[in-house]
Amino acid sequence: MNRLNRDQMAERVARDIPEGAYVNLGIGLPTKVANYLPADRDIFLQSENGLLGMGPAPAKGEEDWELINAGKQAVTLLTGGCFFHHADSFAMMRGGHLDICVLGAFQVSIHGDLANWHTGEPGAIPAVGGAMDLAIGAKQTFVMMELFTKQGACKLVEACTYPLTGLGCVSRVYTDMAVFDLGVDGAKVVEMVEGLTLEDLRQSTGLTLTLANEIEAA
Amino acid sequence: MIDKTVPTVEAAVAEISDGASVMIGGFGTAGMPDELIDALIARGVGDLTIINNNAGNGEHGVAALIREGRVRKIICSFPRQSDSHHFDAAFRAGKIELELVPQGNLAARIHAAGAGLGAIFTPTGFGTQLAEGKETRLIDGRHYVLEYPIQADFALIKAEQGDRWGNLVYRKTARNFGPIMAMAARTTIAQVRHIVPLGALDPEVIVTPGIFVQRVVESAPALAAVA
Image (cartoon, rainbow over all chains, first blue to last red; front, side, top):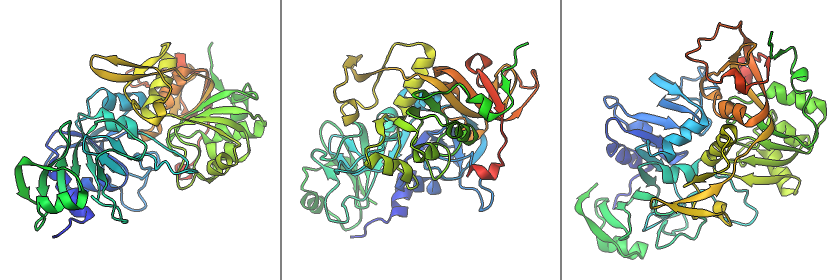
């Protein structure tokens, strides 16, 4: 079985983002998706600190620290891009104007509950940022994550044990082993990497999984 | 003749006293009115309630206020960062109270205060720890949480250009919370890179109308120093 690396996962997510989509890529792993969006497709990247039409990082030495993304990294603005204040920015999410949001996660439940803001460990200082707004705001919320932690725990679960970010908000999960659609009926396997079987996935995850209609090898 | 400009940052913050609630613009360091904050620190006031997206980065701005022990409570969305050591230390020592608010709810609550709304119902946070104990309502099949406006005695914000009537335009992502904080504070003090003559700002592109701004002070740090 060939697990996808992080760049291959980003490439896979990018394939599902159509021309004309308004998209927010969360901090961390999801930002890699931008590297694989085809240049011939107009896709509008939103950053919740107040820009639409976000471009790639500037050349070294060209950084403008008043032109940053939500991860506080220097970025550029594409021709036609624009700036706006925070109330407008979050209205774009909450108001259902954003098409797709891609987020990282600690855990996702088979019904689409998301946990990605707080480990809940005693003594940990909580920070939420825009995670809860992003999770419930976009028309579709995708999660991108490795299926298992380094310790071997499955991150797709029956019910989240970490503090929740949003309820029933994730529609699709892209992992290094398979892609899942989530919903009230639970998790459906959309694709698996070559050499992996549904039985393997059921065994390793311990989840009741069914196949979505069009299964294909990644 | 109405002239809201003041000559120095010290004069701009002269009315802020102990126990005041102060909104401070900026997302990370972009849009952080460092010079106004330095003047506030020099003024010696404390016991402040600060409203900002973060809880300070590095050594400047909100971080410096916390380092100097001037902040009793902070209302923010993202306190913990790689360079938030002054907040982390104060929080662990029990010296600062934290009200953690999802970023969009923070913006909406500030905006609600500025717009004169009594409360908002927001879908963000429903079913999470941050909505525990709060009133909820099912509206049109969707769950919402009741949240109250956040207002403040003062707002310290940073803009690119301002005129003597208080009209402001911003620069790039330094805009962030500036326009809504200007609406939500009783006294808004804008640090601008350039004061321009009345009429120099195109009325079609003014972002913050002067009605929301009470003081304008020119303070032009080198752009590189913003980082």
